[in-house]
Amino acid sequence: MKQDLTQGNIAKSLIFFTVPLILSGLLQQIFNWVDAFIVGNINGELALAGIGATTSIYNLFVTVIVGFTSGISVLAAQQYGRGEKETLKDILSSFTLLLGGIFLTLSLLGILFASPILTLLDTPVNIFSIGKEYLQILLAGIPFLAVYNTYSALLRGLGDSRAPFLSVLVCSVINVILDLYFVAVLDWGAGGAAAATALSQAAMTLFVVVYAVRKYPVLRFRPGRNLFHRAMAAKGLAFSLPPAVQSGTVSVGNLVLQRFMNSFGEQTVAAVTTAYRVDSVILLPIINFGSGIATVVAQNIGAGNPDRAKKALKTGSLLMFAVSVCLTAFVLFAGGPLIAMFGLTAESVDIGVSFFRTIASCYAVYGLAMAFRGYLEGRGDMLFSGIAGIAALFVRIGASYAFAAPFGNMVIGYAEAFSWVVLFLIYLIRCLRKSKAPV
Image (cartoon, rainbow, N blue to C red; front, side):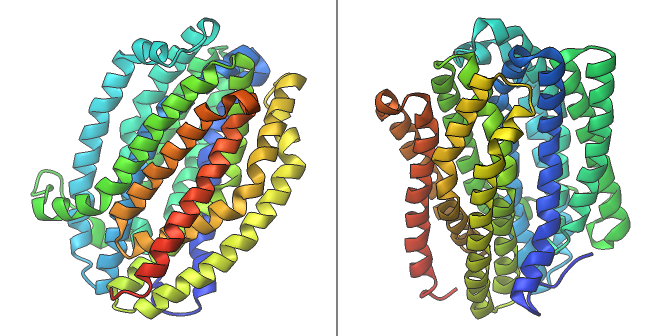
């Protein structure tokens, strides 16, 4: 059900809008968790490391898609706030065609050049073939993911965060069933886990498209009739390209960091990539509260209510800080047992626990950075947000290589925490300046 986020209690609106987003994110992460959990426990740590070696490559595709569609969501929220609801259909049809076509092409190229990519990343020989098979099959689901995220972005702009949750719920159930069948019954290994994920993503996309068509007449369009609108596509790209470029740059940077991490050997690869799986889930409330703040701010900026947008930042920052502190306590207490679930050796679990100790103390800093980022993006300040994210990435890469000698494999965690501090300071200064400027 869509929400008008320009009225009512801000804290209540943020919570009710964000909770389904958090649940959606949790279920999406279950895709990779289920893959890793089943493969790790049935096929062993080597197979798990093979999956982990592909994480940064796959995330390159996913984060660029999410970057594109986060900008679309802000544009849709502003259009909705202005009452220009008929333009939403043009945004949806244009970017369904644009992103669907782009990522179909890119996924085919990724499948074709999987071996050179893994070689470039210095993937250990004993996990190379596992990683290649997993990556090639997984990339087949990327075009579906592009269409799904386009529809979800429009729905979020309308204030509807329930639909993405329901579609991901359907996908998660299918994914678990197929994972168990392909891996545990048919013994297809990592390739079976990848096939389960790709098929589940196709089902998720079908569900959200059918939901949108049935629920919102304003989002219906007829195939073959003026589907691509150049003016609206150009406007959407102004919102979408900066976060997409930032996301893509960050993901390319993560490929550099993946190669850096690979140099520590397969045990560190298995430990840290598994820790990142846990970390990515733990950080979902922070990331989605940031998205919630962006949507509330965007609708209110569109409605000509900048004062309420500023209140959304203040309220959202307080909620974000409280959530971040709770997440820090949780990961310090439960991080080790969660990592151990994936079938790692005791030595690998110890590496993962050490990683959490280095990074969890800065969750609150990261949370506040995401709150300020949400405010800036909701105002339409997408370019600055993208530049700030890229700057933080360079800080992270530089710190990783500069301090590898004294910190060893734990430099991965220290460097990321330091980059969060830098990102927070950049966004804080920008928000202080923008809050005093006219919209």
